[in-house]
Image 1: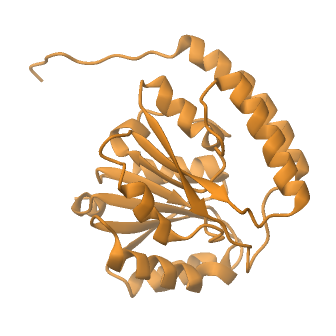
Image 2 (image 1 turned 180 degrees about the vertical axis):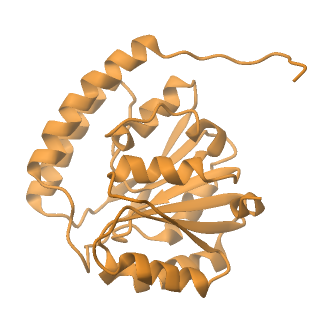
Amino acid sequence: MNKTANYRLTIIVPVYNEEGNIRRLEKELGDFLKIARISSCVLFVNDGSKDESGKLLKDICHGHPDFYYLELAKNGGLSAAMKAGIDHCNSEFVGYIDADLQTTPEDFNLLLTHVEDYEMVMGIRTGRKDSFIKNMSSRIANGFRRSMTHDGVEDTGCPLKILRTDYAKRIPFFTGMHRFLPALIQLQNGKVKQIPVRHFPRIAGKSKYNLCNRLVGPFKDCFAYRWMKKRYINYEVAEDNL
C-alpha cells in the first residue's frame, strides 16, 4: 500500500539542485510535522538533480519516518515534478512548497483551517523579499494571466498551496501547468481561497528562473489554457455496478 494513504496531508517538495537547502528542509519540515493541524507527511521529488541533492534526500528520508522521496530519471521541470508527486499521493489532501524555503511550512496551518470548505487553499506572499526585476516580472505575468483566465487569483506563483487530492489528480497536466493550478481547479467547479503568508529571502542555492522564462513562457501558456478551457469536460458518475 502507498504509505501516504496513512496521512491526511502529503506535502510535495520538488527539488532540483538544492543541496544547500536540504538540511534546512529537514529541520523546518520536521518541525512543522510536530505541530501540523492534521496528520502529515513529506514527499520529496528529486527532479534529476546534478548535485548531491538526491543523496542528501535519501539520507534524511532514511532518518525520518514521515519523509519519503521519488527519484525522477531525468530533469522534467517543475510541472513534471509536481505531477509525479500528485500521481504518487494517496492522502486526502496534497500540499506544495518550494525547496528554496522562501515560504515557511508553518504557514500550512493557516491554509489548513480552510481546507474543509475549499478545494484549493493557497498563499499570497506578503512583503516579498525578491529582487526588483523578479517582482516586476511576476506582477506583469500575474496581471496578464488574470486577464486571460479570470481566476481572480492575486499571486498564482506563491509556492504554498493545499489541494484536495481527488481534484489535483484530475488536473490536465502540461508543461507550465503549475502557473495555472487555481484556474485548473476552477475548471472543475472547485472553489479557491487565498490567505496571506510570510515570505523570506533565498538563503542558499540559485533561482531557476529569469526574466525570459518568467514572462515569455507564461504568456504562451495563457493561450494554451484558453484553448483548453473551451474544450474541458466535466462529468459526475451517478451510479455504477463495477
